[in-house]
Length: 348
Ligand code: ADE
Ligand code: ZN
Image 1: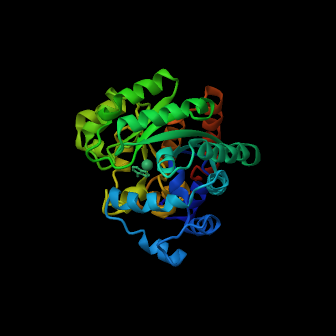
Image 2 (image 1 turned 180 degrees about the horizontal axis):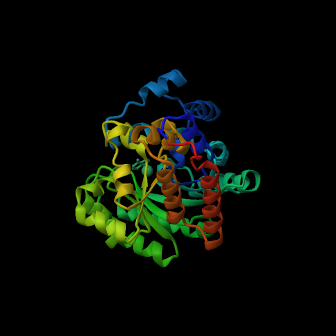
Image 3 (image 1 turned 90 degrees about the horizontal axis):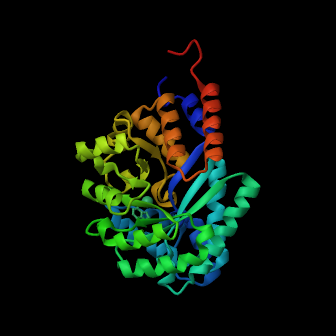
């Protein structure tokens, strides 16, 4: 079945999804940015929502991060963080996301004088509401900014200890080049000793060596992006044999010029090499789409089949921080989806 057929998009709409790579600050839509700027008396360097969208022309990760950190200045109160996460979770519901593991960047806010507790209180309230009202389960992942010092990361980890029950894991994000995982070895050791799971962005723009370091020095459970692994055949074999999850974000990779076009993306090659890759959205308000749009656009560009979609969805379940019963429930939902969407006897 050609992948651009409406039937394929219908199948994607119904696919039970697990989101493992989304930055909550990256879900700040221009409309909400303007509303919060007005609520908090923050001046924006844009005259309109259209002007904001026009400014979203990036040529690499840093050119995006400059605009992303500037946008986050409108987030000031517990209510702001709540409203941001509540809006994101409504989008999840529309995309049939069943479980989401959400990154947040406390240093982006504490550096502006916003208390750590304000951020986490607002986020956790929205997450609890979404579980009751929409049936979406979630986890929070605290990301350290890798272009800041290891000491600043350690101080942030200490603030997180009071919120241990609400923060499942730590991660590593922001500008990758020149900031290898090894810089944060001691911080991740401490996080592990305190009972946090861990993940890290690696191999988005940075070299395969950063993926190796994240695995060997930080002991992360999964790699965010990881698409540069393809340059290193030995690493590819290791990722496949150890079933290391790679949380791939196709629209992000194209918008940040990691690949020229979606048709050139290596997701299908990684999948065919038996890596545990899955599809996610990164910063959907900035990159043109949430998880559903990432699935649709990638399916169209790479000609993914129903088999491919099922493997991608199952890989996301495999990579998630879920307990065995929740994992099994999601696997069953995917099996039911597959039974309902298998090509009929007349399909070619
Ligand atoms: N923070 C938000 N989005 C990011 C990305 N794609 N890479 C690194 N840090 C980020
Ligand atoms: Zn990311």
